[in-house]
Image (cartoon, rainbow, N blue to C red; front, side, top):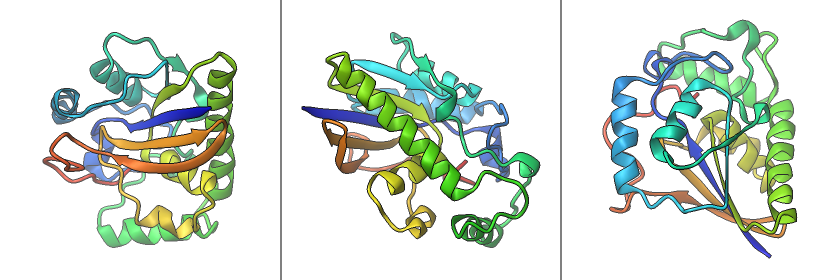
Length: 210
């Protein structure tokens, strides 16, 4: 049975603007982020799905209610962002600092006690496959998950056995993401979720991605 999984990143948060490692911190969306999500709701053909899931963090829950106001999500802690632990709230002020930190993280060389790439990959893959399998068991053929950039990129790398370094080049604009196709619970392919005009983003840059 073919199964469609839609992965959507939350809208622009206060942490994105500050280039902050927010991880599991409960940071709010910016007002610009809310406006951009309202615009995306009108200009992106988000697939209508049988079931909806969401990270418990406020930026994802608020994003969900803007994009899918008539739906009720199943909230799961396993869809939360990378746990940066002692580094939560750390500001990476330049692109070079951002690139250097994540190159080290992807190489499983954490700065302090943050959740490792390997741990996130295992959690993300297991969480997604569990959701797919429970949907299939209920006779459903599609689901949407509103989540975070870091866990989304890591999940795709784990599901499709891509090089870890792909994490550093994958871009997930706020409010957009990927559409993943499964054959039963076997991942087959994925594509970028785009606006109707074929573009992947509009307006401000994507900041620190978390």
